[in-house]
Each structure stands twice: as C-alpha cells, then as structure tokens.
Length: 349
Image 1: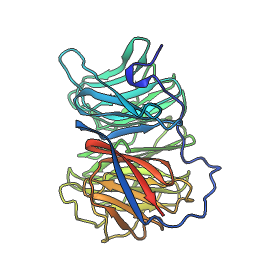
Image 2: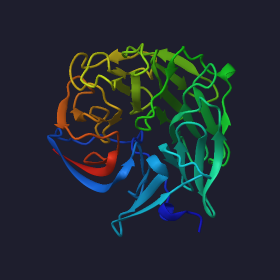
Image 3: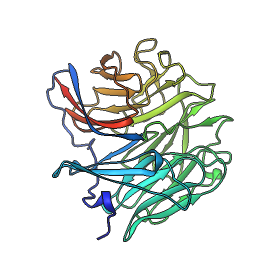
C-alpha cells in the first residue's frame, strides 16, 4: 500500500470552482458556527480538502495528519530528516500523492511513497524559503518561494511530482529589492485552467502571471500597501480566468485597513482597491465562496473571520476568533486552521 499513515484514504483531485458551476439563489451569510476538530501544540497554515471530503494538513514541528470522516478520527505523524524537524507551510495533492513543502533552508518537498514520505526535492541555498504549492492537474504542479537570486523562486513538476525543476531567473520577471512572499496560508498561488497567478509582498507587491503553466511569465503591479518587509499581498484567489481577489496589509499593524484588498476583472492585468479604509484590516487568506457566481468572499486572519456578499465592496465580521487559512467544501461549510487547532466552519444563511 502506497500511502503512509495519514494518507491511507487519498486522493482525488479537488476542484471547487468549476467553470460549469451555476450559482444558486442563496441568502447572505448571517453567522458562523465554529467547531474545533483538532487541537494540539502545532501551528497549522496549510490544509487541503480532497474530493471525498477528507481533510489533510501539515504544520510546525514536522507534524502532519489526515482526518478520517468515517471513523471521525485523526491519523497523524511527525516527519524528521536526520536531526532536522522541518516546519511545513504548504501542502498539495494529485490523484496519486500528497505533498508537503517546508519553509527555511534546507527546503524539503515530500510526496507519498511506497514506504513512507519520500523526499523529491531539496534546496539548501541559505535564502531558500518556500511559501505555497498547488497542482494544475495530476501531472503538473507549481511551488513558489522567496528569491534566492534576482527573481521569485518557482519550481515546476511535469511528472506528477516525482521530480521538480527550478525556473531560471532569465525566464522570470526580476524581483525588486526586498520583494518576497509570506508563508502565511498556502494561498500565494491561484490556478485556473492553464493559468497561475502568484502574489508577492514586501518592498513591492506584484502579481506574477503565466497563461501556459509556467512556460512564460508576466508581471502586473498591484495597488496594495507596500514598501516594508511586512506589507503587501498575502493571499490570492481566482473564481475564473478573469475574476480575482488579493488581500494582505501589514501583520504588525492588523487594524490598518487602507490599501490591503483589491479586485481584478481582467485576469490580473489591473487591480482596483475594494473597501479601502474600511474593515477588515490585515488578513492572511481570502477565498471566493463556491456556488455564488464570484459574488461572495471570505477573509480570515488572526484577528477574525469576515464575509462579503458583494465582491468585497462591503464586509461583515462573522467572528473574532483567529485563524491563518481556510478552504471551502461547499457554500455552507469550510475548514480553517491556525494556532494549535483546525476547525469546521458552518455558515448560517
């Protein structure tokens, strides 16, 4: 059996924003019920929802796990490499394998193997720091991280994650001095069709775009707050090939709500600020809510959970409970993770 401990149930490709999706006549969300599913001394910034509803995570202290909904139990493990205990902030999956990517140097990317989690990519550059990972399909995937040279670090797989290759800076836009990314929620990358968008932050906050699965790249400017190491975009999501949203701000000034969220309707070429000068302030993750024709959004961060029914023009605070990241099952259920817990979010309309 190929899958190791927590991945015995895996895996079917997840895709919650199919182009054929039709919006239902839904009432606006009025409240949220938060139910803790997992508590432990682990920081979780990366969760993954499978098509069968299974929930996988990888977090700090080498810890990772999978929730078995049939038995309503968690299977967890701790991964170590020699004397190193990596911390994970990015996860992804294909129909065959589950992937976990660590932060800091050495960067370690693992996939499920025949006898456990096997290392398929490593990078020991002292500046290596990977932030996010996602797959277009069962064969092609992408991960991104901070610059180790003159560009954002981007690695690509074309063989289902068995091998990964780093894109040369000669084939990527040049990063500004101090431009990087934030490993805050595993949502620095959004994909749709052959497209991928990457949000950066720091001294500059830009969107890197590819329309051919990483073969060529363009850079689009954003109007988000930028200019210090803690400012800029933290999260990006696309509902289709045109409609997208970004959010961030400055986590050291979480109540600042100026120039921290923006919307695009032209595939990322241009971005317009939304709810500028209005709450929410800093948030680490934003997602379109499924089945809402791209109208409804959820933003989440350590300061709380916020909801918009009008593409971010106005927002309602649903909870002051703090999380780092969120993923939707459907329009009424999501899972969120943060400091020492993973929770189920049930939305009431």
